[in-house]
Image 1 (cartoon, rainbow, N blue to C red):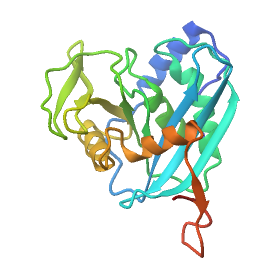
Image 2 (tube, one colour):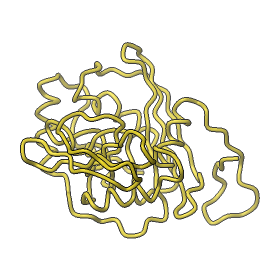
Image 3 (cartoon, rainbow, N blue to C red):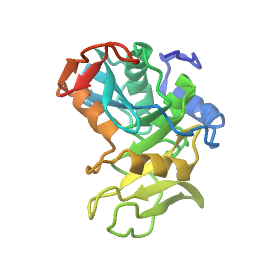
Image 4 (spheres, rainbow, N blue to C red):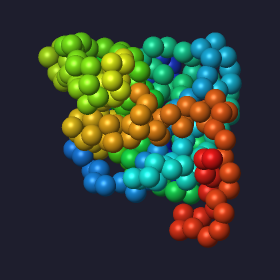
Length: 239
């Protein structure tokens, strides 16, 4: 995948805030997702005080949701752990993994916030702009905003509202489990984001692309080589 160079990474905290505010104005909330052929998930495994981290991207075919490509990068992180600025710590790793992909995903699910962020530019939105690709923020916890109670059934959701603005949705993906916080990353609208998160959930709270990316980042995704010719080439496959 090609990565757009929108700013430097060696920046101060005030500069990072300014970059977030500037880029937030460039986020597209108009959906450019039809029926994707490939959906990717990205995740990071890192300690808050550690110097090394692992970034992973896993590409799945749709509608089968079978793993067709995995890329993992282990590198030093240089930006400090600061709430609200995690994309400056984590994006370089994810981008390095995405640059290695031979398959370009049509949609990327990100383990993090999109516009459900104090400055409306979480990791999912940041990556979407840098990769010029539709992205969805799918976080396990809430960073800002509030919402009403949600029904226990999968598919139930409530709008996530911050200062009168709808910034996402608290979405139930599995019966009577904690919701996920879904938000626009880039080049999607909120109904589209909710639809594809649910479409990628196959009996688990976490959508399959992110579940596999989490396993890959932790070194727990076992793969075998695809046997025989295939349109997608000689890629890794889950067994």
